[in-house]
Length: 398
Picture 1 (cartoon, rainbow, N blue to C red):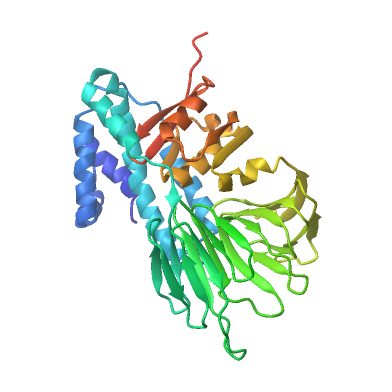
Picture 2 (spheres, rainbow, N blue to C red; picture 1 turned 30 degrees about the horizontal axis):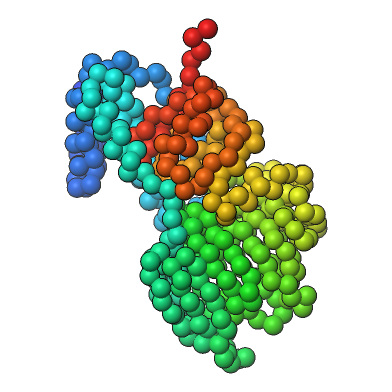
């Protein structure tokens, strides 16, 4: 039976006893050049931290199991991405443990202090970046400084301004099938587009939007994975529908935000102005109509759809370049930071994720400034590693 490779690597680096099956599994894993380089780095970190204070217990296995549960919902439609993410996550867990040890050594070693500063300086806020997948499958990298004109096979003209895509309908034969494009925004990115009907869409980090290059005559339907803000162009003859893996949002003309990340339980639809109807994708009879200032909350785990009154700024400020929090749990805050700055977040204590924070921060500020603001609560501190943040609870001296 195959053993946990994380445990085997830990044994090998610490010099603990391994049986023959574990040795063979480690040798097979090390055949990959990338794995071997990673292992050598871990050995170097271990050697430089022998006189470090013992790191408090961190339940890495629990964190790993939690991650497996969160991504389970995505397995069907993202199997390849899932497998790759598991490999990267296992590596990041090990990096986090080793780097955290080294961080305790910082007070005694000025070179390590400089190294942490360099890592922090290397973490930049997100920017306008995305990939456009055309109807024929061609993938185009949308660079911030690159401006270009693109023509689809159905005659649609697409203008890339470097920060947004603008669609303009061309001459289309009514017998032609509807052509679809996809906008894929990675972690640490955001992008805007104006659809053929004039609808404006802001697409957030780690999100995908699939849409027709030209809408048919009867309705306007787009598919969303992740988060996007919509300002829908009014057209009473063609309802606008945002489909997610859980709910359909049906509108005629309005402004609203939809957050539907597949590794999160809740799908949030927040209405700014106008009216929208939110419908359970599986149980069509379960539906709610929202008024401005209200939010529809669909729980995938409980299969329930409810509404509540909210401060819409908390859910829409991202499109205006700001983070706004009002007694927001640290776990939710760090999830946003993780996506925008493209870092992994780990908690040394499980209860620290429930600490709440209130404040407003600029989305394009350096990560150091943002974390310093949160640390002023005197409840948490952050240990910065290479593309990782470890959250620690501040122990009161009273």
